[in-house]
Length: 120
Image (tube, rainbow, N blue to C red; front, side, top):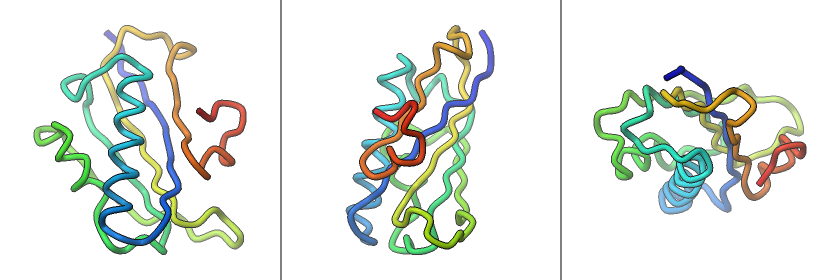
């Protein structure tokens, strides 16, 4: 087993707790599925949100997906002029048999623009 980082991001429709939770669950669910992993394989998750997302903590939605025993933390993304708004980013540290080039990084909805080379 190796420790690997898996990146992802999603742009949500609005600054509401429902939209943030739905977006986080879609993103994390897609990362788990794309990499054939479960919450028990995850060492920790680091979330960032753009400054315009204040209605909910991304980690709270992640906990509801079976991550109660996984360390989760969030922060505010650097505010860069003209950057993509309403965006939640995630970095999962996981234990996996996958080689670095087999890892599937997931960028959904408007966040696909952040990494057009690997967006879903």
